[in-house]
Length: 246
Ligand SMILES: NC(=O)c1ccc[n+]([C@@H]2O[C@H](COP(=O)([O-])OP(=O)(O)OC[C@H]3O[C@@H](n4cnc5c(N)ncnc54)[C@H](OP(=O)(O)O)[C@@H]3O)[C@@H](O)[C@H]2O)c1
Image (cartoon, rainbow, N blue to C red):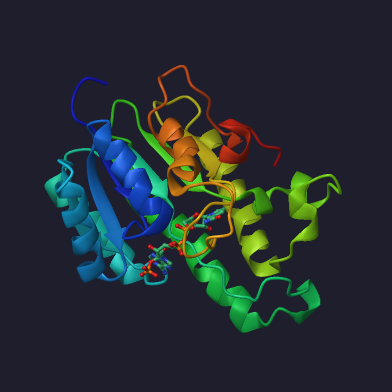
């Protein structure tokens, strides 16, 4: 991996996405910030450039197919290959503690639109460019709350929290990780899920135990895996890059 590598991160104008870009940039990657509001993405890119990072922004709204296609075409026109794709953009729509029977279809659909359909479509659109990389790394940002093992384990902290639309969308995203990893098992493309753990962002609130840097760590590790690294697996910052049960 001696040549400069290019990484695209969705939902990267703030929070974990921006921190993942910062950490990848500090490791020498050229980073492309996917942002649904281009102005906010450009401001985030300027922030990284001020730290000496090669960064730029591209408009990408995960809930808008046309925007996803345009973003993939823009990147393809500028970059011969894409080495890293981080499916980070996400939303948590329902109120914490909403019981499954109280989730509205509007909440369920809005959540899946971004966290699952958008993540799938973005990944599918960027796959041709990723396949041109000598060693592509795809990271889907999941959650400890998207682990069925955690949801069903009374010993897990996740057992006592409830965000059904969000949780179902992350379980579904994890399914994409295993399915894409199977498709690419004999190639140079690795696909893994990363949970940032509970960390201090707008979504995680300032009550969370992990810093944004700690939360981003597992995703950055998976985005920079050597060729003998894992694929088709789920790791969490809660466990300092340790494996998480599906
Ligand atoms: N923080 C935690 O404790 C935690 C724990 C587990 C998993 N996660 C996951 O980590 C990822 C990042 O979360 P975060 O904590 O950094 O949250 P955040 O601070 O709320 O940031 C969310 C990011 O996603 C973007 N986004 C939302 N909807 C989008 C859409 N339709 N198209 C494109 N971008 C969209 C937001 O863009 P705008 O600025 O335009 O809204 C923002 O950049 C999410 O997938 C989340 O589920 C977070």
